[in-house]
Picture 1 (spheres, one colour):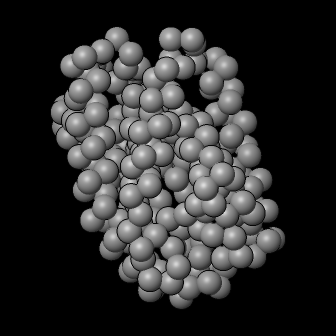
Picture 2 (cartoon, one colour):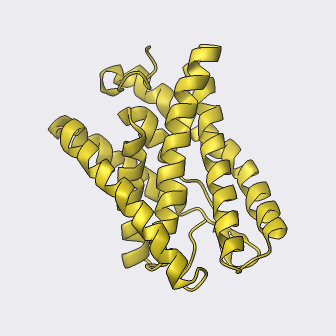
Picture 3 (cartoon, rainbow, N blue to C red):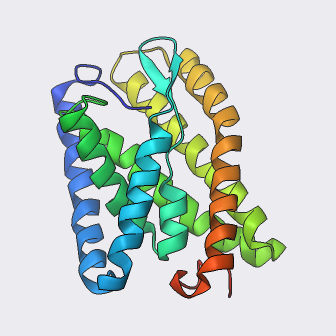
Length: 212
């Protein structure tokens, strides 16, 4: 799902960067207000774990790849969609600048797809589903799956608007791959939430945490 440089025209890439920077600024404000010293190790662990799971790339035809994202997990555990934006921005900066995984000019689009969409769909999807079904871990599974799938669909639409891929093949390829990969992401998210809730329930934020 990491879009490489030159896959999106510079004019469109700049628009995505502007949108991304707005959310990055809001995420930094969240970090200043909500991320005390006690949360820094947790953020570091989440970022490292997300970096690791994103390293498991599955090639998708036409030059992109399928992989897990992890924004939903960060948003749920830290209690804010902006946590997903914050953590994923850190991860994507390291991946793009140091490892060349995803382009620099198109990083705004990647941050929107994985950080913004992943964080917001994951957080609010989890909170809404948990209220309906009452099971935090099932809600985490569904929300994490949805966050990955919606991110992939948006990526396909962006590439179609850019003229890189036709819309239908892009939707089919990215959507199908990530619908399957999302099952793994949902399982990891639910499992991680269970382990954290069992070992350190005090670090889970509410209302997105396991306890209402």
